[in-house]
Amino acid sequence: MEEIRVFCPATIANISCGFDVLGVALDAVGDEMVVRKTKTPGIKITKIIGQNLPLETKKNVAGVAALALLDKSDYTGGFEIEIYKNIKPGSGIGSSAASSTGAVWAINELLGKPFSNLELVQFSMEGERLASGTAHADNVAPALYGGFTLVRSYEPLDIVKINTPKELYATVIHPQIEIKTADSRKILKTNITLQNGIKQWGNVGGLIAGLFTEDYDLIGRSLEDHIVEPIRSILIPGFNEIKTNSIEAGALGCGISGSGPSIFALSKGEATALKVAQAMKNTYQKIGIDYDVHTSKINPIGIKKI
Amino acid sequence: MEEIRVFCPATIANISCGFDVLGVALDAVGDEMVVRKTKTPGIKITKIIGQNLPLETKKNVAGVAALALLDKSDYTGGFEIEIYKNIKPGSGIGSSAASSTGAVWAINELLGKPFSNLELVQFSMEGERLASGTAHADNVAPALYGGFTLVRSYEPLDIVKINTPKELYATVIHPQIEIKTADSRKILKTNITLQNGIKQWGNVGGLIAGLFTEDYDLIGRSLEDHIVEPIRSILIPGFNEIKTNSIEAGALGCGISGSGPSIFALSKGEATALKVAQAMKNTYQKIGIDYDVHTSKINPIGIKKI
Image (cartoon, rainbow over all chains, first blue to last red; front, side):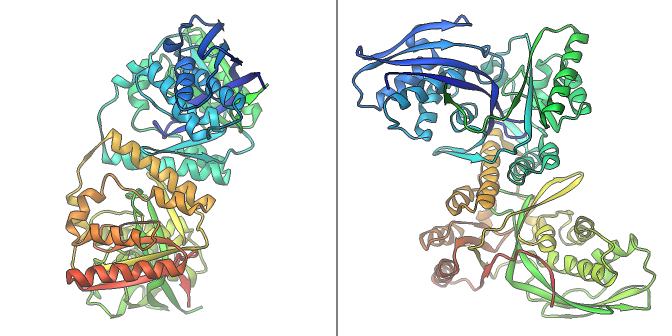
């Protein structure tokens, strides 16, 4: 195989209680990339359609992730990458993760899969480091593994794939304001109370149990965040209204997607997820904020060849 | 039914990463209780064998829990309780929880099961409040539900039963020193770092996932505690040696049982659990500390009629 075209899914990180550890891949939103082998060594980004992003390899998250892979490979040729961006950078649904994971997954396929998923996560994290200053894995893991993933530990890196309940849908609304991941990390406090910590790990346990037993009510009850949401939600206009109206429309729960400003809700069944989308739209129309909204099944496999 | 005899299991709370939320019931260690209906209203503790504990109803955890149940019942008679204690108070394997849950479970059986397991947890928590000053549920929940339990939330109280892997065994060693739950709570800090919080909820997620998927290695990797163990283990002589030697003997992981001083280890298979018991014994014999040691299968059903 000399060339491959891949779909790189958008992802929701944190999922309310799971700050820095939980993530989930979407099915209906994502980028596309074409990657082809070249005789010239190195990585060349030849085209970026849809967004204004740097073509220079070392300034592009896909380029940096691909270079991290090449550094561990004995392949002596190179790769050309075309990126068709549908996910807006800074939207909070894993735009940089889609690009970095797409590049390394595609290259790994073209090389005959010498690297494991866990290694691909590590290469992709270099892209995340470029994008946000921190090599986090909560978006890249679900993009590569599909479904829900848990980053149990960063040192050593340990990724656990969690069961995906069949009727689970996500709704994501992206208000057209910009929050940089680096900025939204800065406002977090270094310390938390033990009491809030206990609530948080109780909810993480509940969410994981709910996902394995496909107990939608338990999933909903566990979608609480006592630590990050109270601080970060201040940066997102209309957050509380969106959350209240989503839950009234039938969502199991609602929270900040990644570092925001996108807001996600999980619902049982597509019909409810679409009602939630309508409730979210109505809210932002009333407030007068422009938005993009997506409704999507959970993507159980992650990046795929198309 | 006028009289019932029940087995009330010992329990391990916290299970390393799950401070205040996780617990598990044992099979080979526990108290017995006999409860019988009487025409005289109220609760009378007629006999306590094995330990020197107060017979006065309001000073006894079983009495207090039973009174909390009677308070919500329309039954006009009373009950007599005999307690045969095998679990030493203050050992850290749920001595008070065994008594309080045994009393309310037995009474509920004799009344034709008017109360749910969740209500029985709430009554039993009044016994825990008497014993330690805090109405915690991480011992009473596994005693009543069996297997592994998660207290997802205290307000409202939400208990989740977690799958029990078939080959999982616990080893518990009780050094003959006394630490009061109330004292071992006092030394905890009110605040923790966000970084340690993230590690902790990553591990809780990993442990729950490992229990559902019966992935013993994942269970082992998740048995880490970055918050409570570093502080409380100082109170337990030989803790680090016991932990190192248990893991060397094949244990999946090892930590403080409840608020200590007992130390638990989880192992795959009885043979390994027995080797771990031997390693623990050897360690305390070398240091010169008296101990009790127990090896037990996980108890999947909790309290039972015998």
